[in-house]
Image (cartoon, rainbow over all chains, first blue to last red; front, side, top):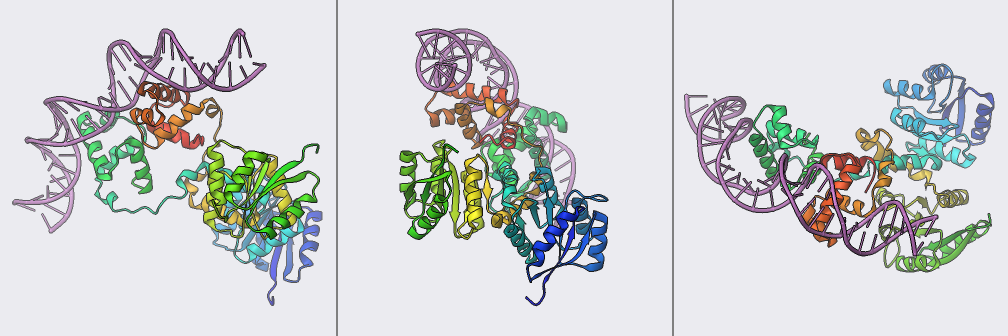
Length: 220
Length: 220
DNA sequence: TTAAAATTAAGTATTTATACTTAATTTGTC
DNA sequence: GACAAATTAAGTATAAATACTTAATTTTAA
């Protein structure tokens, strides 16, 4: 461990900073190189002190922790970021992940969890407190059906014509042949033919399969 | 704590079972009521001893832990399930979640994490070891386009009956009324009625909308 | 410019779905 | 055991989709 992990602490409460600092400084492979009292200051110090990792409180004056993450990532700054929060609110957690944070800890987390998070994230991993995992699960299970599909092969999609793609789009929005015909100003019979050819090309025999196949192959 | 959490342990290694057992039995609110050495035995003991919670190893002879979960959930058994594994392989984790497990622990987890998981899950929560959260994150970020949907409201889902749910499942697999009727050994007319009621309840007017709504509200 | 591909649309017959209503049985619950 | 809710299924009429084929135009690419 010749190179300790250089950490910046950003939290507007002295107590919290002191607590975390003493916790971290007992570890020989971690060094707290700066402390910031708000988001703006955090950004400055990150630019000046170039720490390896930031521990960012979410609720801070002059720019929230999430805004700091967004700013950093928009500057292509790949510094490691662990969010720190009193709250396991779904909004905070998901916003943090979306913004590009590498970890999320609750202020109630144990010392062990804290150190694990810092080490894991410093080594390129991700760490989200076990308490907040149910939020992730919720997000996952709500979209689980589309999550683990075989990699789309684009062979057949090349065979579908522009018009057929239009028909497909309308079909997937729930329209019937008549409505499609009206929308495209063509005869209902024409819409029927396009639909027929489309289903034949994609080798499906009903709307559900059509919808699935279209999604799989990203035809829309 | 008048009613302790009644736990079943399922793992094919004595050492592991003993270790977990001694860990759990130090807690006054937890009682280990049975131990199983493989998946089949676990299923039997769950039926006989009706524990509140099962700790299931994934790799076991005569039926894997994941198969046990699938079996239980297919029987509408809502027993709490915590998976236990040596591995944080993405496949295992996701399969477990999909099958309906409430928690996932690594064998390397600390005692504290173990107890937290058992208590959280027993109280209706979910607990996934912080170490595996990056897997969840990956899934989330890979499906980010669908990830941020408006929060599903479950109002309507409560109104759909068991039979209707069956019909829904078949509809979503692409079956027509006739096929559904055959599959469930009911009259085609009955299948039609269920379908009609279903669509009315969910306020949709075609299969596509039905499929979308079902996905949104996680009705299947 | 010319053949190939795409779009258009009609014909025909069969099957399936829609949109209800009515009503007889089960099943579950206080 | 009584009442509500769920499951079952029939009737009726209309609309839509399926499964093709044939064939006239129009567009596009070599």
